[in-house]
Amino acid sequence: MLTDRPPRNSKLLAQFRESEQLTSVELPPELPELAQAIEAVMKDGTRGEVRQACADFLNAASAFYRVRPPEVRALAARPLRVREGGWATELFGDYSLDAALIRIWTRTAVRKQVTSYGTFLSTLCHEFGHHLDCQKFAFSRSPHTRGFYERAAVLYHHARGTPVKKLFWMQMPGGRWRIDWRRTNAVRQAADQILRLSARSNSGK
Ligand SMILES: [Zn+2]
Image 1 (cartoon, helix red, strand yellow):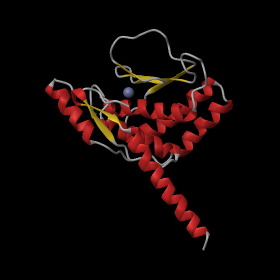
Image 2: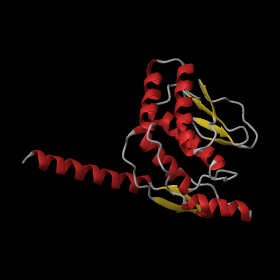
Image 3: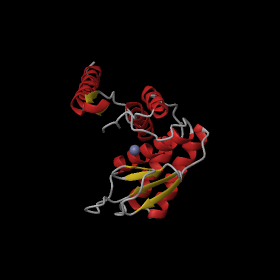
Image 4: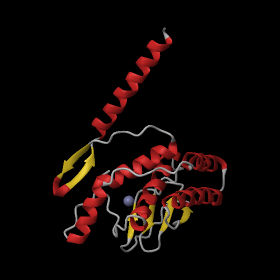
């Protein structure tokens, strides 16, 4: 994960800084259950059912944040056509800033393997993050800032029911940042180990 370069335009830069500072969001309580429904249809449902489960998830999240829900389409694989501007594109999904449309694919573009549930849900939360930026925070370009990634991660871990990792960042040239996975995962592993050791000592009593 790499942040975008800070824009030169002063209005966009002000939005970028604001996005950077905003590192958390309130969490819709019904998302974990709706995420489980997505996992279930990914295993043995049709693509139409996957789309509907995503729509249910996004509709509940949108109602919670009081924004209009995005359109959502579930595609088999990433379209090969390269589009013009106005889209935020990830490896497993994209978001049209103009049309408020999320597209997400259930198979990888190259080998056509099924996208894992974790990757799929993480992409859905990421694209919804762009929607929130545009509809709730009025960030016209929805930049990938550290704050953006932190918010998307908080939403994802809440929906998936996994503990939030503290993200460590490394500064890159040009005012960009990238996640320091070595440090981020080392802290996570140390925390897991402490939990395991304390569980062991408690069970030994
Ligand atoms: Zn993005």
